[in-house]
Image (cartoon, rainbow, N blue to C red):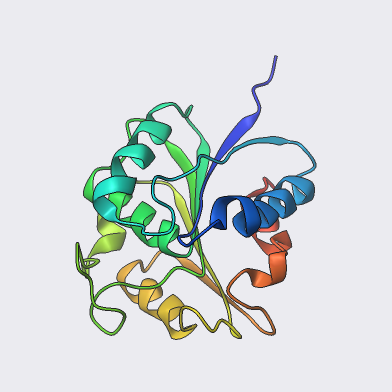
Length: 184
């Protein structure tokens, strides 16, 4: 019996984001993957006021329940917190891929950080062997699309995808994300 590969999707921050915004991203991803993956979508605590202190323990707990070969996806600030968690303490399980969607870069050249700044050697701190993808819409009015390039600098192994005509939610279309994480 073949196990279904798992995806852990970490939402962005803001009032009602889990139920009114990022649920559309999860639906798009699930639809594009044709049910071949089990997509886990936990509600983050105090979603309207995201913080590393509150979200990182939840992300670590969720990752501890994943099987080897899982994919982790983070949208917006959820992606920023997720990548910091991974760089600070890689999970026990092997990850197949790490995907950031419209994630703001916190650190030199990006946004200032109250709780942390992403290190310049972030790529070296990430789980070995995990593919890394950064997706960012060029029409994003929330997190500047230039932040994708900043992630590319500190994660040299990342494949950066800057998508023309796409907003912060990638127009609720994660077809490119699905193609990147699906086995060829």
